Length: 410
Image (cartoon, rainbow, N blue to C red; front, side, top):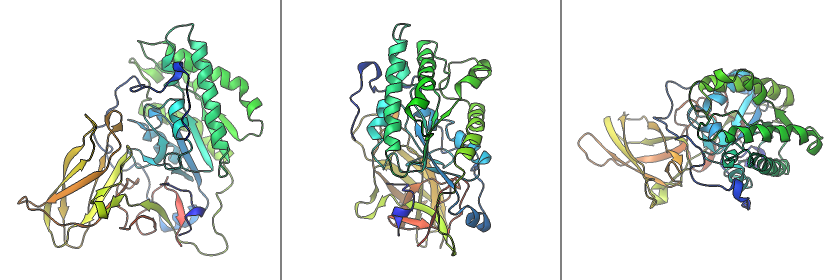
């Protein structure tokens, strides 16, 4: 498999940051919560065979980097609305949101948090196009009028460093830099002021720093502030509502389509078979998964000749207090068919820590059931299991949805 010709989906130096912008636990002010792996059916359209052939080699691979605004709670709605506006977009990333779209956002990140992982391809994979929105967590360090300019300036300096590292990658074509969104935090109004000032500093210096046009400013703040009451509602708000994600997707979509018109190169002149790059995270020799980063996953397995209801207990292995995962799922086994279910790990540092998972399967009589061909994978937009495979492979048999990156099967 010539994986060096595909965008890597599954695959530093840590910034010594100033005290005002240091990475601290629970940086995001509001509590993150998630009741399941997504409400209702998948938001993505399943592509026909003709559409797969038409999209193959002609997509816009986009990696979205940021903090919890990029992925927590309603964050995957951003990608849901974006793919409706730009069907050619294909999301690249190591994390998976509630609708199965890939991204590289991590809750609680400040600019220091992004810089700490920016050179790790297993956390920020290569892509031709990036969308970066970061800095609002840095701005929570502003506690008075006097500290706002310093916090804003420090935030911008770190944003430049992130962009420089992305531009240094050979695969990078453009970085879309999103302005820091307006927020309301009653206990700390200076947070929003620092974000607004950071945007002013970026606007003033962006073209001088990057005259080639490889960094594209996406102006979210000014249109939002013209109708701030509708954006914020009546309560404190850092993460947009679903309607807010629809708005910013609508702002970004035409810019993405205009700035990324050239198809990502694929094979031409001969027929090519396209699929989606999948990684099976189950380690058979250890009877557990690799450590799972926060996100949504699908578990599937074969249960031999079993028929009827089975109970699957899924637990993580961690010695960190208050980070345990222990849930039981009910699945229906039918001879010749694979069993499957999806789950969410939890948010890192908000009741979950990166750790391996193992499973136990019993039948209705509480008898242990031997299962084979276990597979644990990032949840795809279809919320269905991919065909079984080991390691990293291209699945050209399972349904492909909008927003998934198509790669060529060798």
